[in-house]
Image 1: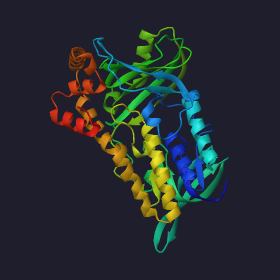
Image 2: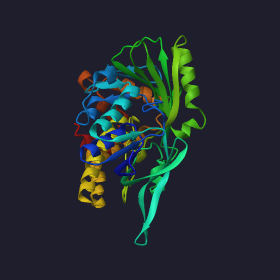
Image 3: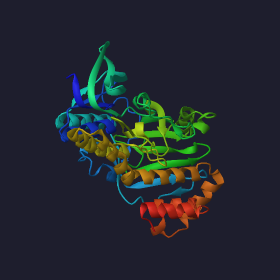
Image 4: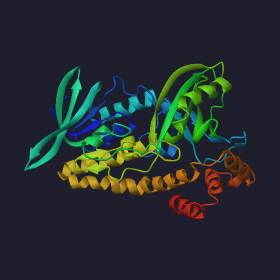
Length: 393
């Protein structure tokens, strides 16, 4: 490690590694810092991602893919099943391998990587009567250290501490913070090309329960519900009840829990020489809670913009990052957030009615768009907004 870098990236998840890779490709000296001992561990993710979200960011490697998904199965509270056309292909990843390889790609691009580096603050100095951020403070092998950086990237996850230290409000209202729990099960039979989702008050109040297949009879089974609902029913308890009923003989390989900010992107994702990416910037799809694709796309944009700003010696160039993100996904995520709020409190009876109505549609109209259009039938203005935002008919 050197004592000075053009770019310091805090957090070696997909957002951080992709930012580091593109910044290094752009000619920057880059330090990628991870607090955990092993990159990619522990896995706090359902591991599903759409193929389109990866295309144009990084070349997909077969070893990352635990399952290729061509179908969704949506299960209403009364058991009615809808299998809409998803209009594409998705993957269930092996995040342990995936995250590791993304960090390796950053190294191959020229970045330095250090693990077990716990960043505990921003390094500030007074310049011309103004306090400026010049790097980060951290501990490594039990020793307090500092490292200088021209641009500091916060890829440190939900409610980013680094963002808070820089003066950015990264707080998420508990009503928009999905509380999630997931178990990876072994010895489970499930078709390996379908993701299954359960809705309703029993298994997923104000959220959904998912089943994502993996190799060798493994399945990720998880539940995400609103912070409001989690005050009375803990996601882990719901998950345990579901598995006891559905898969009583399954072996539990892992259990994880965490929060997902299902809200639109932060209003401020750049401040002076600090840039936020991924969950730290709330770049998650508010409807699905999926964050991998958005994190990587944001990382690519941020890395490219940072490299240009460093080369020009002008931090004002960093403002191109939020502009490009807004054009790519920011506006869409705001519409997704409105959609989420519109369906947030649908009763079991309404969910059952939506499923029954979708099944009455011609098969070619039984799509994800068709499901949402049916669910939002009483919100015509939002249907029009959806159609305009996503180019739907």
